[in-house]
Image (cartoon, rainbow, N blue to C red):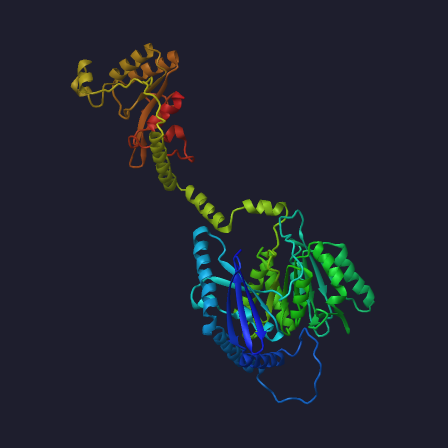
Length: 570
């Protein structure tokens, strides 16, 4: 596994960094405790809370009724964020951390080169743990480590300083849909519409159960419903939306109904049961989730996504929609969290400044990242369906194949490749003498037959008649004459008689040549042969060139001369 473990501890007025990896390898570095950065963070946090003061998913206590003068909190938030991040990044670029940074960057470069070679994922996870809340609240996820040296991707993930439970990886192929338990708490001043719509869109990929307090419902009944759901059913994911707050000793508290909260320590046993039954991931879309995440990982849950700060209702809704969209694409929860953060940073930063800085993923170091698994016969079929690009390519090829020039060009390549393959593989049939007799009529043969000179052109029809009569005596069934009988002569009747006798007495097939002149067909005269008893083949084709037969025309009238002879012989 490509994991690094970075422990950051406050010791007196110093900050100790310890990076470990592999087989007991580690590097340490020591910096002065960043008092100025803590002050910049507190200043940013104050402006952040003022900007998002309305519709926060955390309980806010009124501190007076004096109306303050109007303040452009957004401008102040942008400025305080820039100042805070600048000082934070400058501190992390300190020379004392150079060895740690270069080690991480070298590993990122190695992984990038390996991913190019074998097409594997080019990510390295850095598990960060802090020993005090001041350090824990800092946005370590914004640390741009590898950008100083290489473009390899390093992902920051958090882990508690103390982990007492081992984790069981259950994220294997399952014969059932994933199961999500969604708990909606106190919605005073909030709206869960976006989250409810997003959860409904997940119904084809997961089984979803929604628990929501109903007005006038007995609170003990609702608590019992939550506990029963946790211990009697198997869940893969847990989602909570509503008000929440950090606590020092109870692992955080959740507001499940107006003026009613429940501490994680109160439902510790049901949560352990749910984890033992397969619960792998939890998302708390609520405020101040650090103590919640630490508690759940300590109980044995493999991964938890939380908001470290107060979160505005609309920000929470936008984040959850984007997170769930990535989950539905079968991306793991860390990729989904990063995708949602990127959306807030690039698409919504003007509307919700600094919102991308407050999310964190806590994970047990031995846990596999959770992701939805494709389920059902539909997915199996979908794997074999072509992609839109493949459909477009196939459709284009089909349309092009309907055009005659394309067919002929492709056929040329096919025949050529088949011929080359036949020669390479020695699949050449033995030489045989085909049962074909080729008679070549030239001046020598005409002179030997005593043909007079004026009957050389057109050739004496009686000479053809003698050849046909002779072939008939040998019971030859197919006779092809590659000569154009398109002019009347005094001997046409003699030739016609020989043709009829051969057809009637021997059942001979006659194929005569025809041609095209000025787009008009020229073929055998009816005085020579009856086309109802004989065939004509086009003699204009190039020798040795195979042409496609047009399906729209009659082959008897348009096929090549040699094609018809071969067709009749079969």
